[in-house]
Length: 67
Image (cartoon, rainbow, N blue to C red; front, side, top):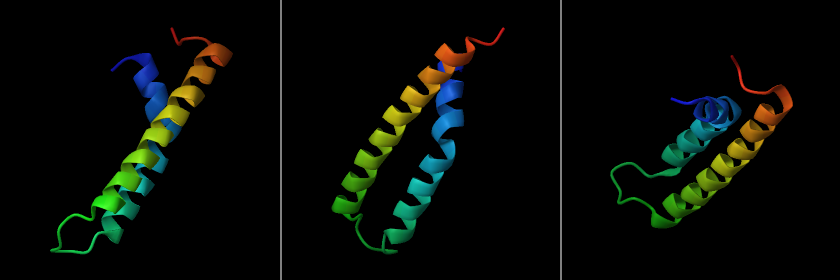
């Protein structure tokens, strides 16, 4: 794992787990996967990752890389 990956994980990990949990709880058991739910969750995940990279990148510029 590199430094930027760690910053991303620190920035958005809790939100990603909340999104995944929410998605799984909305899926009806023993039913085919609800495509609209999955598509919506993937777009939300993409936004979280972009925000995480932005937030993590700001952390690099603000504090510099760890040594």
